[in-house]
Image (cartoon, rainbow, N blue to C red):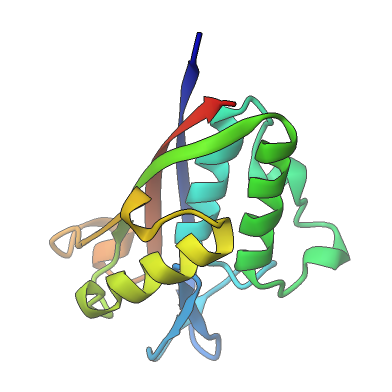
Amino acid sequence: MMKIRTGFGYDVHKLVPERDLWLGGIKLEHDKGLLGHSDADVLIHAICDALLGAANLRDIGYQFPDNDDAYENIDSKILLHKTVALLRKNGYEIGNIDATICAERPKLSKHIETMKETLAQTMDIEPDDISIKATTTERLGFTGREEGISAYAVVLIEKI
């Protein structure tokens, strides 16, 4: 019997000056970056939470605590790689990922394919198994006021 599980992840980080903007594992040109203990890549963090939740392995804060100096300013691709290794150690493989980034700026459409390629390589899966969408909040709320960026992810994993 094949065992299939789903997971949901969400993350948000504040936009601040004098920080690099990392989304989907790539650095984007922007006048602000996301504030966080790591590089604050909200898309990767949402994906990690979704994967960990699906495998019943708690969440990113539990696995990689923000009070641990080992993770200060860490590239979130490393956290994603470690998350996938943990999943595989527990007998799971990724089926697919569907994610949405909410941001007014920068416009993300032209970066989506590069994000997919980068994330696929990091997780050792096919880019076709990753869907990334970008949307705005029509200038409403904290994302609309460009105070932060949020991301959502849903994943399907299977027990091998």
